[in-house]
Structure formats: structure tokens, C-alpha cells
Image (cartoon, rainbow, N blue to C red; front, side, top):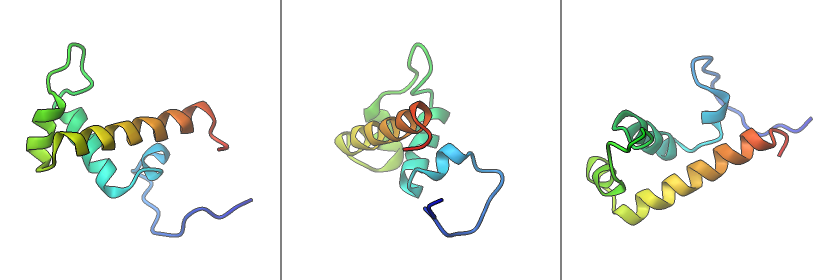
Length: 79
């Protein structure tokens, strides 16, 4: 067994989200709430960037890292 994190436990937070930074959680929540992951998409990265006061490139980087972290965690939970 390896200790990975020490902090306050919040049973209302998904274990998947715990693997994300607070900023990544904010970006993901904004993307979901504005329809970025809807089909068809209701928001673009440029629109998310405006909402978050970030550059579109930064939003793209956050989303890529978020998606990588979540996909890796789901595909192999013991990584």
C-alpha cells in the first residue's frame, strides 16, 4: 500500500476528480456545464477560455491533461 495524498476527505467528490488539480476541476466543471462535451458541442474552447479568463491554448492544454488523467485512471486504476 502506498499513501498518495493527505487531506480532508469529502465523500461528495468523485474519486476520479481527486486525481485532478483544483484548476483542472474548475476547467472541467465549466466545460461540462457549458456543453463542451455535449453532442453536438454547445461550447468551443474559445468560449470556455472567455468564461475562465484564460487563453484558448491554456484551456486546450488543461482539457488534454484532464482527459489523459481520467482516461488513464479509468483504463488502469492501479497506475
